Amino acid sequence: MDLDNIKKTWQETEIKPTIDNEKIQKMISNEGRSAFNSLLRYEKIGIILLIVCIPMIFALSLRHTPVIVFYLFSVVVFLVWQVYKFKKLRRINLSEMGITEISSHFYWYRKVILKEFVAGLVWFIFFFILFGYFELLDDSDYFYRHLIILVISALIGLFVAIIIYKMIYWNNIKKMENSIREIQDFEEDNK
Amino acid sequence: MKQTANVDVQFLEMVRQNEGIIYKVTSFYTDTEHPLGDLYQEVVLNLWKAFPSFRGDSKYSTWIYRIALNTCISFYRRSKKNISYVDISMDIPDVVDNSEEIQELYKLINRLGKIERALVLLYLDDKSYKEIAEITGLTVTNVATKISRIKDKLRDMSNE
Image (cartoon, rainbow over all chains, first blue to last red; front, side, top):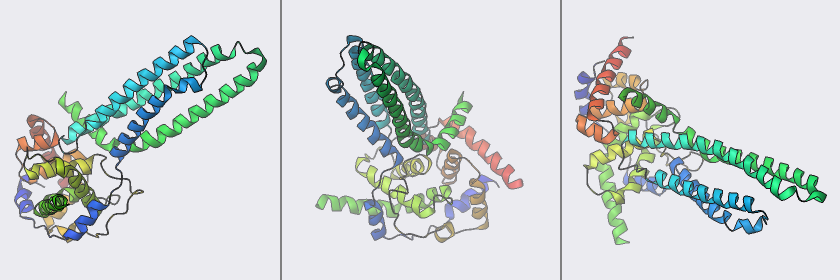
């Protein structure tokens, strides 16, 4: 097949209109959330949750300065990161950007989500060790009981975090993987 | 209210005038998982959402191509769990007047990558390399190289 030979036939190909105005109007009233909009919404929820985490310090009744400082510092860092990620994702514009530009933004997003997940896990383990060390060691009467509660809470937290990441990110990211793979090939060619 | 109705009319008119582009783009990306009618609806919905922000910086057709291709390639589609599509049963032969050559083209493009398909479509629609670059985000040189490679690839595929 020669693409140049078929060009003329293609341009002369007649398109038969099959959809009336009423159906078009039904289509535009048929909302629903795209994978992209879902990600944007979850990132926004993430920002709100992190803001809520700041006053949560009182509910956690943390007593030791290193734990309080570590907690507050982490929340602020996560908040800044979350806002940056949200802003970067929001910049993706369906009607202004080219296909390759959009795909490379998603490629960046997928990469940072993977890194974020690993960093989050490390932080989670570190926080629980710090929390356990400072908040439990001086409480000898209930030490073992508190230790068990702490380990169980950490495991539940870890499990919930994995489920949330899978539901929110992996499923939506999977939908764009093919496009991403192709753009990687295109980028390789450009080097 | 009157303004909304006016936008509705303008939008419907724009879709009507350019439905050939929407059909052609969606027909290049249709498969068993994404029927032509569903893709068509996704494109129309995204056009509708982007319509108020269209500033006229580019031609209507360029803008429609960009949104239609972005919708078909990227993940601007909605999850089928969340929506029920308007019932339109249409297939490529119902919409596009099929010659043998066109039928062969459809068979072959299914074996191409998504961005490659976009380049073929824009090339067939006689878009200049500059316009193709503008729509896809590739450089003009890259567009030329890619199209040349795709032409060879299609030739080889049809000789197999």
